[in-house]
Image (cartoon, one colour):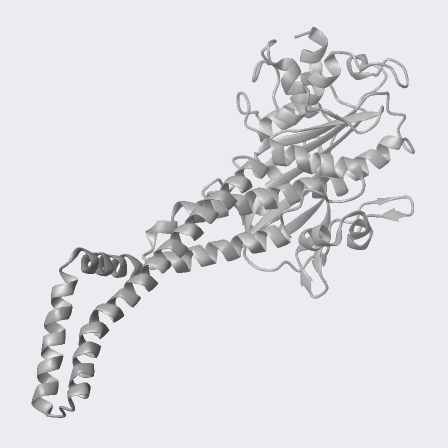
Amino acid sequence: MTASTQALDTVTGARQELTVVLPVRLRHTPDWEEGPFPFELGSRRTDAVTRSTYFAPASARVLYGAPGRPRRWHQPLAVEHDGLRLLGMELLRTATARNPDHALAVLHLSVDRPLLPVLRAIATRGPAPVTAPLSGPLVPSELLAGIAEVRHGDGPFAIARPYTVAFMTPGPEHTPVHRLGPEGELPAGADRWLWQLASRSNPDDFPLAPETAAEQLAGAGRISADWSALVLRQGAAFLGHRSDAGPDDFFEFGALHSRTVYLDALLLGSLQRDHIDELTDELSDVFDSPRLARRVAALERNIAVFRSTYWRQHLTAHGPANELLLAFQDQHRLPARFGEILAEAADYSRLVQTRESLQISGALGILTTLGLPLGTAIGVLQVLGDEAPSHLFLALGLSVLATGAALTTRYGRLVLSSLRGGGKL
């Protein structure tokens, strides 16, 4: 590890934006403006209408809702505390079948002091800082008081710590991340900075092993020659590779995208992860109820709803958002986990079908065992023209005895066993 990469702890970039995503329980619908936070750049306003043209319609409905059915709200703010400025907040409803009150709170901040220590403190890396970043007027529970309460990892799919999306551009002096010429090579330290911002750790927290460093850094995506992105399990980062010229620089547009469409791609990944976690939980207790067929039918319906509503691996014709979503899915193994869910649900469905077939076969066997002796006895009486009630009751009794004897045979025991097994479906 070079000295230049270790110095990121003391670096304040030319432009530093931070988005913090927290899992919350929504107590009631907020009286905020509907839609995502509408950041503006020149004549461009990134409201729900603008963003919906960027995303496929199915993804846009999940992220922004539909007319009369909002899923997202925002509130502009102007709060400053210890080098952080809160620009606004968002709430995205992420209700599931078992947790209809779940949501994600999004805090949009700008940072005027070294960014990495702020990220490390949010991730509770190292010793606790004297002043936590989200403290004082920036305490989430106070900002959301009366509207939502922060979840603290007590559910099966609550994220352990807040998810962070960091955006940083270098100044002229930050040569360890400057590309060598407009289309030249990146220095070795560039992806180290990107890794530290995304992982929210410095080399003391998490020293990359030299044998695996290249593999772990290979996930960095080059959005263009100007900047790169890296998505990890608990954070994502965007890092510029040339000096930021300030207002009117392209990086203004890059920062806007990191807070809007690229953030939305990661939020969709979070929704997918939450629903897959819930489906996994449903699979684990499918045998806890005696009504197996009913539980499997409900599970299959929930899988179908998830697949139709949330499971998207293609967001838009624009590449970077898709790549970010795929990277998030890969970090959480979502495609593999969903494949396992489908396979396990198919096994349970076959089990239910097998048991139902056994139940039907058992019922037919009982009808045969009961009906054959009785039908034979009544047929004989009809042939003989015997209509005496006593003979009819005698024939009925003999058929019952014959049925009882038949049920003691191996075939009869199999019939009864199949009925007992199918009775719990």
